Image 1 (cartoon, rainbow, N blue to C red):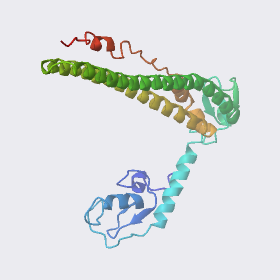
Image 2 (cartoon, rainbow, N blue to C red):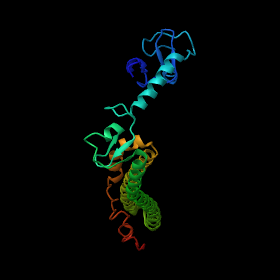
Image 3 (cartoon, one colour):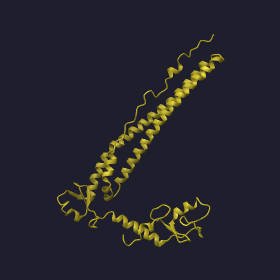
Image 4 (tube, rainbow, N blue to C red):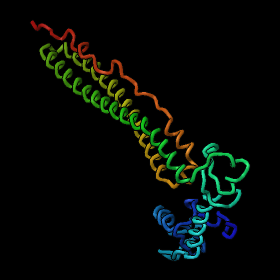
Length: 275
């Protein structure tokens, strides 16, 4: 890529990535078209993000030459990732022993000459099957977490219904008493409410925690499944990291002992006898 400008000259100062649809401002600075629109949407004046000079155009033109140069640079950079850095030949083989991509020159070298090598497509297909097998326990774990989440949600709903029923019963019983007993009624309701809030909060934390784990696990599975769709070279380059994430274990969901409201404790000694 020696024929290209330095990468910093092809980089947008706003998003810090290679230019995409670069436009030229009146000050001669360039920036991605979308980056400029987003930047201007937060400013009172249409100014250059780099030198702050006001633009004389509402719709600066796209610099075709710079755009073509950036596209060519990106394409060649991607292509270079599929070439052997030692011999500048395309990767065509995969060494099963060293878990490395090889070109035909590497295969005939002393280092790999006696090793078992396969075409990259065959090697990728075999290793993708290994990753798929490694994904099965993660999928099972995801289903287990989802089932646990449903249990937590049912418990949270049951706690709410328990509190509602207990509150109704407490009010009915205390309504039979004289005014001097209303303080006791309110005290018991406060205790019930405190326990409801405490245990509801506990269940909320449990649900939030299991939801985060489900989200994390779903994201990991989705990422791995996306990596399985990658071409052979990209997949093999990241295979070990992919397999490590696929086999990484997660802690089992925690049980919630004593999670429900002790209704009997709140309803005890409520059958007052009014004289």
